[in-house]
Image (cartoon, rainbow, N blue to C red; front, side):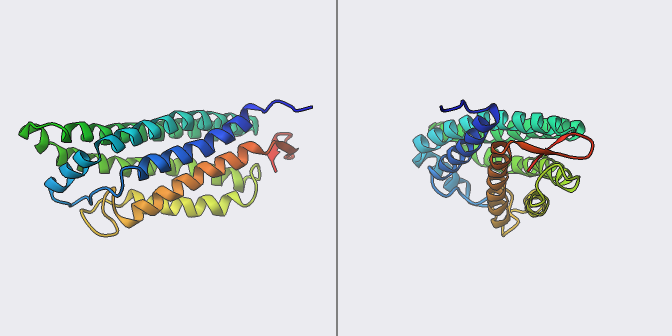
Length: 230
């Protein structure tokens, strides 16, 4: 007889769906302009890719909604493991990260609508808003860092598999590199530099990690009696 999936297993599917939707949504319009690209190039990008940017925006925002569900399940799992402080921190940091991602993507989609305008004053606003949008990722990586540090701490405490600590340590370093990418050009360019791209991929790895942890049930207990995800 087939047993019903638990909420945690549904969250695993949601985590994978989040990654797929976000990757498709980000890749659909094509490679975005560099942070220091001429304003006209930015306007032309959003004008020429108007529909694909809007479709991508909707897909990513759906992914953000699913991400909130996944974060809630991770926080509940940490609370069940006796890590109430870490659960609260992960929940708050996760919600903040989702908010920043949602706001950034929403602004990105709005730029496509601005670029479709024939008003010169409106078009002139594309470049500063685009640059502002890229800097939202600076805060995004720092709030996401709080999540992986919390998971690494849980790994060190022995309530998560031992592999989670080094994995989250690497992801954390990449988030830091993405968070300090505030230059106008080069690898450290805000939003569009190579380090930001790598840190963004690390963010997706983190979500996949959530899915792996949530799929596996608690199968053992620590000395204090709290369950441990094996």
